Length: 79
Image 1 (cartoon, rainbow, N blue to C red):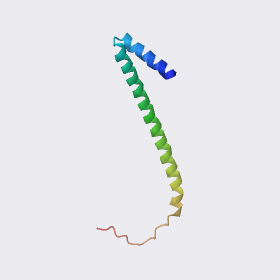
Image 2: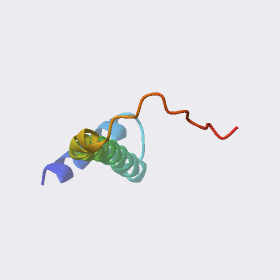
Image 3: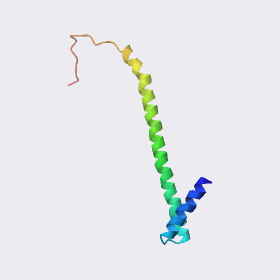
Image 4: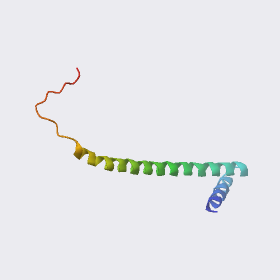
């Protein structure tokens, strides 16, 4: 219901700017589509951010398992 109201208001606005009724409705729908695309991008970024953070937190305890390097050992760098 709210979406239909929004489309109607945007259509009226575009009609008042001189567009035909069909062009105004097409532009209103295109504008609404752009808003939905933008919001979905923000939400997917937020989900990815949280998933990455959770992955980092899960991997942090593995750092404690790493052994300390032995001092005085010559490391071959492969050159």
